[in-house]
Length: 304
Image (tube, rainbow, N blue to C red; front, side, top):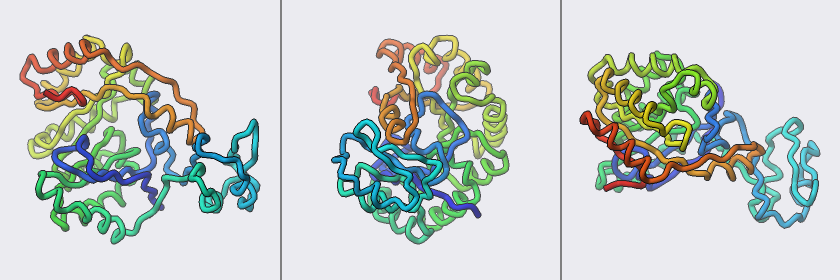
């Protein structure tokens, strides 16, 4: 089994399924959404991050690197990722945390011990554990192993997925979880290719296969990012509504764009363009379009 990096564990999460949850973010994603809010998780391998505002330019990181992968250029540390052997010595040498990584590995026992810390909150709130990313299907064998342990511990489990992976992996993981938070980025095939980087056919066919099973269908919550003038138009909302009705799906969450990914991308050495959050009136219009036929609609941050 290949090594799986976890890019963060968020405790007391309230937006990744019902109740208070602990969300585990797995690194690695086959999609390339141009608005990605976790761009530091795209690469499945160890990722060295640099937060320039915290750097005091002491040079400790440069001196610590045995591969000479770090240098000063224009008063900032520059990382030559081709030379970096991911030893982590520069992170240990950095006294301010300007150089850091979110790439960590956990044994199964270590991960379960972390999840267990909030077991009382899960029980009180009806919460549990959520697996997100990145993309959980990129590490299906490992994620299924952890999922089995989570269920054995008695916690409810949610997965957030783009659905872009092997159908048998999605089916295996779906059978182990209580909630499937299934992301749909755009209902137009060409726009999907342009903004997400892949043809949506695999995503759609995997979702349709899940929805044919009534037991799986009841677990599915559709989640749609809302990017102004990209996918928040009426045509896309009507197409989404019709598709959900066709599959007999009942609940959809709209997630307004935020630009937090831009700074995280910069720290990971990635340039990311900035998009626009839809105005409130557009979000409310889209809520009305979807709700008109009886769908349960939640606009994140606009809960009534």
